Length: 441
Picture (cartoon, rainbow, N blue to C red):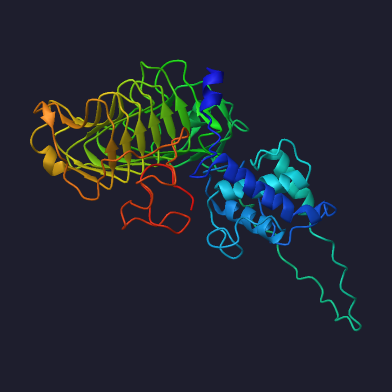
């Protein structure tokens, strides 16, 4: 399994550029910084940054913006114009940032020059970022008299100090496994998981938890030997799952969320592959957001939607590929929205309706700005009618999304800049792309 996982931790070397383009950009940056070879002990010209995680392609955050400012300020230019240039640094780590990091690593004699800003690079940055010692100010020529200290009576009762029991929980530095942190968590705790491979099936029995992979799915894998990757239990209705790769077995779902009542569920920035069902959700009220996930090569459905009653589910900016069915609606109620997603090359159907559904599916399901193409049997299929159907919605495509082997669209893909115009622009300032990964322009 280790080999398979490592192969799937993609290098993300595309984003619409060829390898030759990337090498040319790296060489140009190396030429620009050749004069800096003798300045290996330079101090950052930009404000100092705090880096607490590994930064690599597709990571977002203010620490990425700070890194870009540092690189630009020290001659490792992200880009000459537009997003990423001096004064326009962004929170997105793309291939241009990677190329600048490679150039910086080369100058700093960091091996390998991978473009990943990891522990070695962070340690080198910390050495360069030591602030200079300023001389002390001169003593005053006429020091003012110092008043005597005020007399403060001791308190009649010493204040009690109670160690909080609910806080951020770190895995594995404070808890050896994710399950160990979950088991002692209080409602609304934040569990932060460091990079690594976690061979465990996690059951969440406390409501309101946020489970976050600190460095994203390329570096943090949950690989249960049996059972679901993550599942809710005990009437839990609220959870946020952010940034994991879940590689399961064909007998169990990757993420299983059976909510008996109202849901408040967010599943985002994750990769779910080789499970029975990628994400399976059941709820009768509340909201479920499935956002920016790559759901690939699962035995049955990529997303099994069982939200009913007054519940709302939004599947936004996902890429579903290589599953038996991409998106499966298995309910007669609720409100269901598929937006800005790619549903392609699934083994039978792209978007399918169960035989138990009624004609109400045309009222409860809408598909907007989604590219559904190349699914082997049908792109849209109703088991109730035994025929294809046309979904309610606007802005949809039936076109080859032209995905590279990393599941990133090529620069010429029709999904580039064709997402819902009411959504926020991509981090490069252009109109939202369709699918999980944006194409950096």
